[in-house]
Length: 138
Image (cartoon, rainbow, N blue to C red; front, top):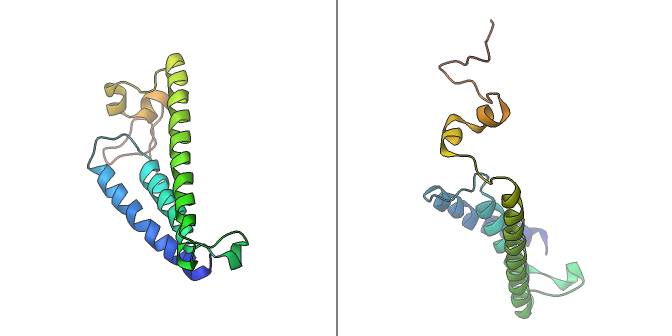
């Protein structure tokens, strides 16, 4: 795709990602790095829009929907679904294997205290109240 199409793709893919981030905050889903909203939603929209904006003159393979090849959008859709199924299935299997050896989550008390303290024995940030482990000198 050309530069203008790439800019349009980026702008269009950013919107659903942003709203995915806003929606995730309102739920109890545990996705602290917002992988689904940022990479899942943005990547899906970007992959689908590639099927819209693709230009054979630039990629040497196939035109997209805007250049007379609506089948390319369908191909991209199938590829996106395959990637979702593959990554979802492998993630499930890996989580089950890891969960059989070690717990996947800490308990609520450790999470409330902070994982930096309970898992690593240190504080990442010094709060306004101060910290017993760090002192500041002027």
